[in-house]
Length: 515
Image 1 (tube, rainbow, N blue to C red):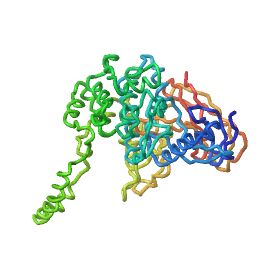
Image 2: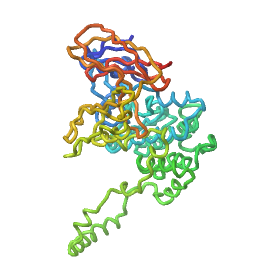
Image 3: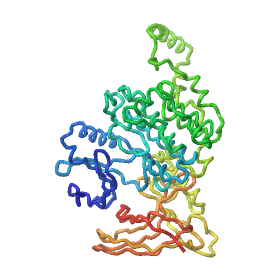
Image 4: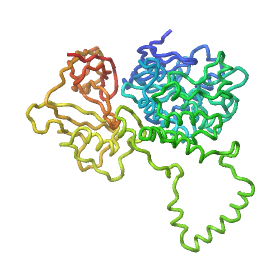
């Protein structure tokens, strides 16, 4: 039975999914009016200590991680003894659905690289915070209509230092088609285990199938240990040789032979776009081959040598006056890798995040003047200074020489802006689009002078997110009021429109723009 109210705080709109251990509901936070997802443990598992531990791990792991490619967690609680997690509500499809619904039976090379790069961004962030996901698969990736991928479900995630046994007899924790060989053997999961699962997911994106399908759960798990995957290029000849090599390297049986980090795999994926016939994935593999069981380890004699000679070397360098220069010039090993060409610069249709994520305003950096700039230039300017919530409203003037440029900005130029609040830009156009939609929302206006807006969310070719304001007005407090309007678009698209009240999402609906 679907609850109406959860914990007296969240009004349930509808159930959006039901997984192995939990129900997920789309709901509205009744105090903030924000649309959220509430994940509640199924009642049949309330006395199951393992499921309770897994649910608690997901809550803790999700709350620790804040990244644009990871579904965010806002909090936890209990409703009549049933634990729940409040999560970011992401409008989109699972990657599994996206693959299955593709007319070709698989994704394009560019789309697969874009989505996988975002998964690797999420993994790189999680690994840097000591979290191994352990269940990376297309079912746990949500892709929005704008192509942004978000990794979800940290239900079996563990800290890097935790003991993780995932295969014992016939009990498999994790999805058997995506688990790594070491997980199938009951060994601890590592960063390379997540990379293997990401490789399986990439294989499926490119071919429409997973590499290993057995008659039973156990036989499938054993195939990860003994069978070599059929090269994806043999199933889909459009896959470039370099990308084929990247997938096969991620699927190496020996973790030592895979990519040492998600960052390295992402770098090769982007490089494959401009060097589709390159052999760099294989070449790097031959140079980085590591002896099993000796990764980052040194012999006793090596330690003795370091212990004896390092102090002597330091004293000698200090005597020469080079120690300070040497220390100041040290760099992180991964930062020494030559930068690959930007994905956005080579394939416009691919969405890759992480590289342009805004941070706090740099100390002393002033708000630029963007009036008179084209929209893309203005978006880049405010994004680079640290704004993440960017709203663009549109005005119309047929014979104004400023048409096509920004004519107003909310943040005052030449001051240090507060990037924690939204920035509003006004774009002047000659006339509105010829496609229109009639919309209506029913809602309660919570207070006098409430700002009511209808927006849709999009991004430009540089993957900078912003919201286009279609309707913007101040309303006084009222119960069950209808907000209706005719809105316009330049193309005959189906868009998700969001109704915001004082900046908080209150309603959403899909509308089709037509002549």
